[in-house]
Length: 405
Image (cartoon, rainbow, N blue to C red; front, side, top):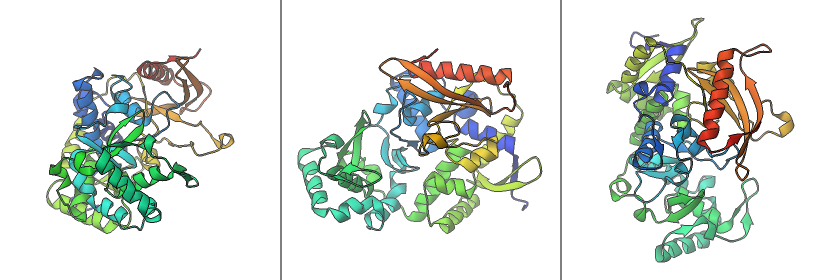
């Protein structure tokens, strides 16, 4: 370790991650305090959360009672209307939809940072532009129609079914390609259905006309990733934005940020003395020191989406929490250890259990298919049981369902 490299314990890094993720007491997170409903305060809270991480991942699966882009804010503010996140992308909102971590809602100020990705996808060398390459006449017709007739819903895009693993109607697939290359933008979503429009009608000129280099984009994305994670390895920083084949540019960006005093190298040292190299913002080193001196208030437990920003990178979760975050959605039922859509239970700064849930919206019911505690032994600690029960109750209320007996 060099003299300029800071050190944190695993506990320090874990608490810092939870604080930056908005999962500790509000005074430590810098995010809005409790809010409810679907008014302006609730919308601003969601914008603040997206701004903190730089993205809110989208996903179609709603088996637990809501999709992940609703589950993530509901775990921070359970009183928010569960439908608000579904309708957040509207004209005039300070977000846009694009390929960030995955398909995500992203703060509008990061639109120029993804210029390199739009160029890459438009080059015709990736699957993102395959629809345009294989059906250029369809692509031209869609653009002409949107220009002449206005926004077009994905439901209105027809044509024969194409694809193997991800089947889609031809026109819809081509429209997705046009969105990936930046020739179309997503104007809004309702009931998880996209509405496409021309970028000049969706993205404000202030951001649309800015042209950033690859290096400028990577610096901005690295800083936003650090803001959301607290401490992070280079691997985590790259995977936050699915950055591939640019490891040297990431290292250069971190060196430039360190020279500017905006980022610092930092090792996380485990109890046995083994360290892992990473990076952190100087302000977050100070926050970690303050968190070291406080005792978190007793936590009633909270359920987290398996796609929550603190959970999606399995090695990081294992390192910081000692928790094996397995996503078993794509496994056959007979091969699953915990269940299809397992939601971990966070209690204080520990992950203590995981629920596999299934919602029945029409019946207003939430079934517990499985509950697994992390603690060894036939009987989990009383505190863990209380946290799991409280987390389930709070979650069911937030998605407006009753837990089955």
